[in-house]
Amino acid sequence: MDEKAIRKSKLIYWASGIVSICGIIFEVLFGALGSYILGDGVKQYTLTISLFLTGMGIGASLSEKVMKNLILTFIWIEFGVALIGGFSSFTMFGITAFAPEGTDAFYLYFITLLVGGLTGIELPILIRKANEIGVTLNKSTARVLFSDYAGGLVGGLLFVFLLRPQFGLVKSAFVVGCINLAVALTILWLFRKEIKNFVVHATFGVIIAILLIIGVLFGEAMAFTFEQKLYKDPITYMEQSAYQKIILTQDQGDTRLYLDGSLQFSSTDEYRYHEVLVHPTMAQAEEHEDVLILGGGDGIAAKEILEYDEVETITLVDLDPAVTKLGKSNRKLLQLNEGSLFNEKVQVIHKDAFQFLEKTEKWYDVVIVDLPDPNNESLNKLYTKEFYSLIRNHLNPGGAAMIQSTSPVFATKVYWTISKTVASTGMNTVNFHVDVPSFGNWGFVMASRDKINVEEFEIKVETEFLTEDMLLGLTQFGKDEDSRIVNDSGEQFILEPNTLIDPNLIRLYENAWQNY
View 1 (cartoon, rainbow, N blue to C red):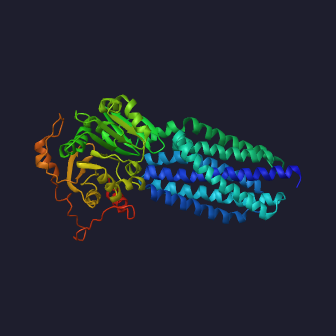
View 2 (view 1 turned 90 degrees about the vertical axis):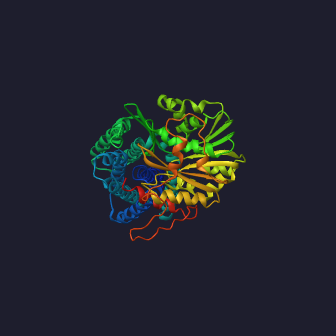
View 3 (view 1 turned 120 degrees about the vertical axis):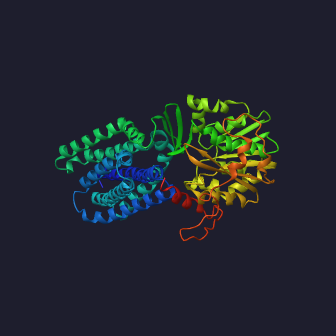
């Protein structure tokens, strides 16, 4: 080959690598979109990856039809991927906000299959073009595929560590679309002598570039207005952290925190939730010196615990530093948590709760589990027998734990499965529930190695809601929310503990909340 042919072949290998990087980014981005908007992350990632790969297979098959104008075909496919993929997240939020229910899921799966199909057409075309230039078929295939596979790794790392945390889902899609377009325009320029009507094709490329740049600059702000439709109150703060979407809303003095779309608290009634979470546990525990909070990065549970003068240390373990940073900096949250995260007794650790309990050798008098609901695989492991066994193994003699356990009304099977899972560790348990207007009826499970006698509980600090007289009533459940669950046929539903090997809780949770 002459020097010019070598330069062109190298460009094709670079193009295949960059195309693969963009393809894998779109693949995982679609999974993240589905996880955030549709829920059940494992299901959405499984479907999007499967559909994307199926699309690539279909595209590779269709590439056989492309017999001439290989470079021009590649360029227009890249134009399509840039435009469709670039606007994918923006359009998804718009459809979710305004279109009928179910349309967003159909759109996501269709766009995944379509972008996968376009990506699948590209690689065979590049292999054939490299062969056409003069590279032998076995070398052209091997080199293009190497660029493809290596690019896939780079794309995954870029999405996880740069694009998603720094740009979010909407801007990331536009940025990757721009990269696809840059590849197309570069190829268009270097192969311009082989392409008829070069100016026409370049003009279309420039138009797409203008649209994508507008998307980069203004798309996120417009998508913000779409997302506002999903929330009752105006959004005052929004951040896509490395772990989750964090949103604060406010209206007429009511501040609400949402993590990945799930409400965590409302400032108008959070005290009902947090007082039941904390004070019965403190009443059961014989000592209060060392307290562990798993979750609770907003600092409100820590505020309640600091009411007890005998508390010497509070270890707060929250995976996401963005949440605790918000709890230390946001004026509304500081009013709610009274600056608890700045208290010298509070040590904040950013770590997975499961891993923390596996590694720590410390024992605690009180353990408060204030984690989000088990709506994905990552959270599900924090509702397993293995996790609750770790809690048991870090409780001092006479210690007590309280676990937020979702709603016994809306998710009855989920609540009692959590309760049975805690009891399967050998600890004694008592079930509590309380009406929280912003949530509805909400449940908790108290656990201790010792016998739990609610009638003897004493609340020794000032509260806004909780009284000693009402504690026993919080352990009473109505017929439609107690553990005697029956199926539609009238047969008793058999509850099984949730484990790492058999994570039955996710399925129960998804089925329970699909109508709410």
